[in-house]
Image 1: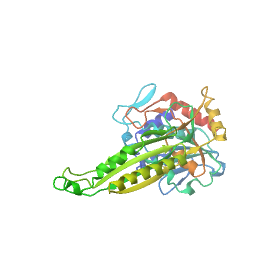
Image 2 (image 1 turned 180 degrees about the vertical axis):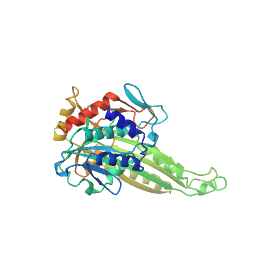
Image 3 (image 1 turned 90 degrees about the vertical axis):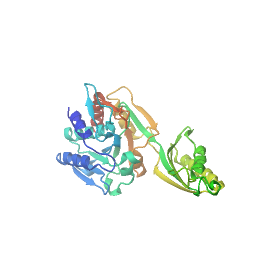
Image 4 (image 1 turned 135 degrees about the vertical axis):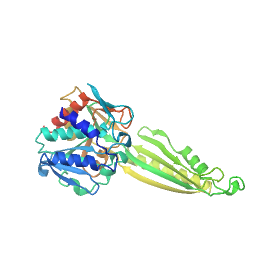
Length: 351
């Protein structure tokens, strides 16, 4: 089947985040050969279409993979694609690209656009920084982002917003043997702050996690510099901001009491979105899914995707599950039947 051969070819193309040139060239050659016109912004995000004024639906995928899928050691049997467990597979998101390319070849696609982003795996970099002119003319189109783990049949109509907070603590260096009392230990201060940070689920709609703690140095010197990164996600952006304020206030109090200097950098990586379950785009996806299986599931997620960026720019976007499992790790796989279902689903969405 074409989708299988395309998938095999795509997973053998190296495309780690911000190094998507090879897969971009492959997609350009394939789609322009089928008569598609394309736009490319300064980052390398790509939009393909035949007649812009006729576009009703836009399918979205990202071209990059995690480093572990570069290049995938592909294996397969009669029922699934997987790897030799030394690499990730990269079905996230190359299964979506394969299906989109097959659709472009097998259908007229006059009412369809295909959108490919770079850098999704590094905080939605491509979609969140895209040139606004890239999607000019598609304000009324419906965007289906093909990028979620799980069997075909789930619609994600809501996703969290996410912040990253970086704490840099500056203490005072001193000889640890001769004059430890003259020093201010940045590791100790930042550790106290870390213990006060919420971890896991601070409430029913939010999650928090310490991602890194870096403090290089020698044991004979009182540490003068330490750095910690922390993420915060929530299904309510105002709640996320309140948590941020509470965290920053407490951390500054701890640093002040210890006579250390603390720099706090907050990055609003992406915003929460929610599409009503009765909205046209959700109902269309539900109808298409229920033409190939008994019941569609509609749910929220604590993960982010390019749909967050699209919705924040004023476009209407939802996410659909793609049939892959265990993304980003060596256990990643996709059933061939799920790849088939994904193709039938996108074909049904444009009919």
